[in-house]
Image (cartoon, rainbow, N blue to C red; front, side, top):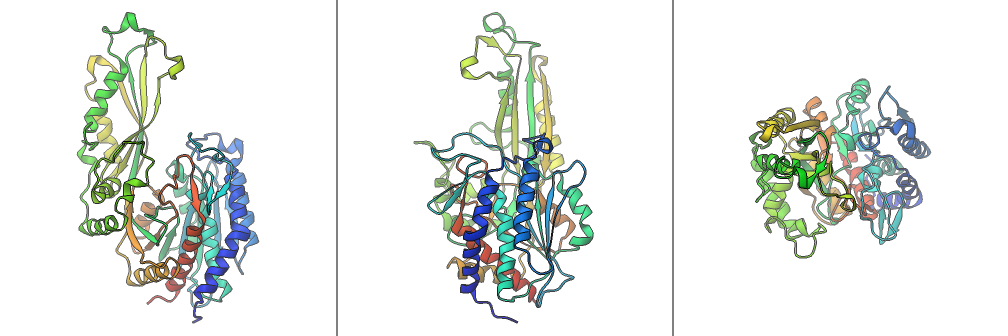
Length: 476
């Protein structure tokens, strides 16, 4: 077995990122390939196909011996980029490492700082700003460069399949069809590497142990067939907004934010509580100081442990959109006919998303006052995920990689977001091991303004992935 020269490995990765990956990632940021839920006409606009072809061309230019690159297009589905790298050295061809990322993006959002914009790549102080660079455009570069760095030293690895989907930000509606179509080529992976997660800081490797699910739907309250002068109608017809407030109070404690529906709660395993305590000790006040709170605003509690549990193992509700309300400058004295809001529930691992959706719908629609028309339309419901117990070889490899390339121990943490692919894989392959990590650290602001990729962290994670894949090939 070839002994890894970790200094050479990192130098190779550092050079490849600077010379090739970063310029191409800048071109990728320029493409407004919003996910299908935000751009239903994505096929006609062609942005997703442009992104897929850009990434395909880069991968082909980095081809390893025997490597295959293709953009798959199932009818009516967003494209999928697939890179297959045969086993080398001590790696087994019948084994499989599945490496995952996505190319679709969130919409622009507002509030970008001066000189920054969603589709304009800007590098400042070692950070690449622009939509989709960190979430999750960098993943294909990190995955393939990790394998190229191993090949540079003749270090073996199992057969690797890099899968980059194009509908993750919409809940991955197209991914199951591709997984079924690729079943024979995927086989049963013994290791999954996902680069679409958070990191608690930029100082060490962070391994995600759990993800929350997501239930999204629209609550609509209608009281009139059309708007009426407020002086004529108020006091006679109830406002749709007042009824909507009453509906929301049924499902969320207005004082604490606690979700009031039992079906959205799940017990927290003791092992996750212990990991959360360790994470709280490491991160301390940065758990909330990473947020751009307005002056004078404080978190719901100053206890980092409770905040982390709130964010990873307890259900929460966010109102993410509103309809039926004119802008302030167009707000006349009118009793509006309806109010509608988009609701996004984060669901703990272990919660049945279908049962949760039904429970929310029942609670919101039951017994509306005054006979108002109340409807909750479920748009998507995705389950959360809790990682299986980490195998000793993987625990050792992650710790060694973090110490080598970050100079500190690896840490475990739950994540408040959703990656539907993880739960899908766990159900299909219960014996699979997972390395779920990422670059979404403090202030990186995926989905919001000023999203950035910390370039140094991306390089270090690439090196960590290479070391873990090398250890996987010779595990016992």
